[in-house]
Structures are given as structure tokens and as C-alpha cells.
Length: 188
Image (spheres, one colour):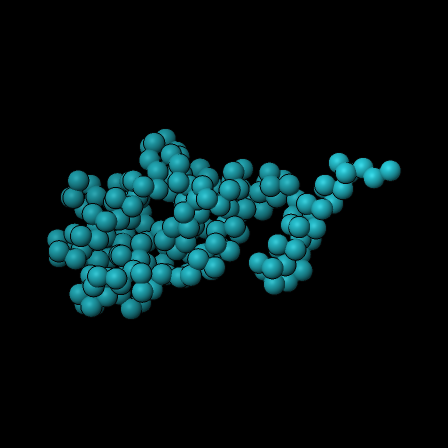
């Protein structure tokens, strides 16, 4: 007699293993349950939320973007889009980093693979030190979300491109604490 309920876990394991092979291109053991896997892989702390763990995501800048080049790089319409990495790259990294942060919610749709120092402020597009799985929902004691960070990024970008603030201080302010970056620079 065939017991379908006993086959389901085996089929799920086979499907997950096949997905891992298709994604990574190399053989891996079938992943453990998400909460177990996250607990085992957690190497980054959630204690800093809504900021990333600075030891895992310190930020990284693009050497092609300097104060002298902002008018021909970040301040040109479409610049960020032109250097944004592919979603194939960022989605693969997001899955790895969700595990590194030990998030119990492993639904990738609940996270933005965020450039800690944004592309619009000369952040490195592909360096994993500048990318992290930022929760789309409110986190930490500040009650802020990824949408709030996007607003700060845009205001800093406008200030840099309007020559109200120099590039490096804007990069440093957002990398230190995006929740206070505007006030630290006298912008809000």
C-alpha cells in the first residue's frame, strides 16, 4: 500500500535539492528546515536593525565615483540603473545573507537586497560588503523601514548633486547611521 503522506517529504527534499543545483550549479546536501538552517548559518547580528551588522555589511564605495566625478557619474540621469547588478546576482546573494542574518522569515520577497551605501551616492554595486537583505517591514526600536531609508538616500543624493553636501561626508553619514544621516549633515 502506497502512503502518500510519507512520500511528500522525500519529494520536497528532491525538489529542494534540484532547485539548489539549478541555482548554485554545484551539488549540496538538501537544506535543513528554514528555522534550523538560519540558526546554524547565522553569523550576522540582527541587533543593529534597522541598520545592518557593521561587521557583515560595513559598506563599500565605487572607486569610479569621487567628488570630482559626481557630475559625470551619480548626478547623470540613469546612472544607478546603468551599474545596478543583475537580479540573478543579487537574489542569490540575498538568499545566502538571509541565512547569515538568521532571519526566521526566509521569504525573499520580504527583503530588499539593499546597497548600504546607495548607488546614487557612489556605493559599490557588487561588493557583498555593500549589500545586505534589508527587511521591507518595520524593524528595531526606531520603527523605520526600507522605505524610510530610500527617502533618506534620495534627499542625500539631491544634496550632493546640488553641491550642498560633499560626497564623502554623505557616504560616511549614511554608513554610520542612515536614521540620523540627514540631521548629522544639517539637512533635517
